[in-house]
Length: 161
Image: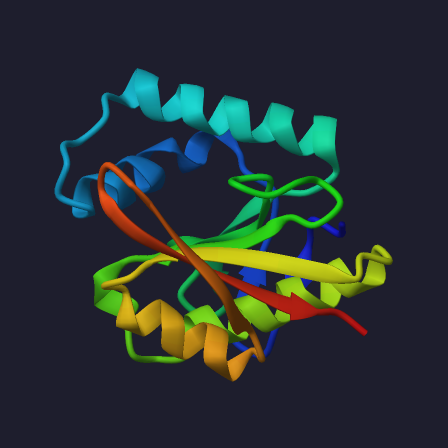
């Protein structure tokens, strides 16, 4: 997968250790605590290593004009496989509603198709209406529902050209 993607308004690029603070803030926004700087750096280092090992990655998303990190988007093994990975994205609440998730995910879909992959997955918590809207715009279709100790997980899939 290409690790440098550009859209009209966004740049997706590989992680750098300097992104740890933004990732720390993004994780804190979830409401389940704020990781330490060392923990955030370890997550970034793990993401860099995983990208090297698998050839796929979740990439920081920056706005081209402002240059700020607004979240991440990309491919991950997650609950799937390297051959049929999951697309995933998470953006700061302050940028929700601007179409950034859809724009970034479209670039990732194109990059995934360029690798010869034929299908992607996404898993979404049943309450996450905004993610379902993004995935619907991208042509994902519901496949099944499973559950874990945190509730229902909806599995969606999309064939790639």
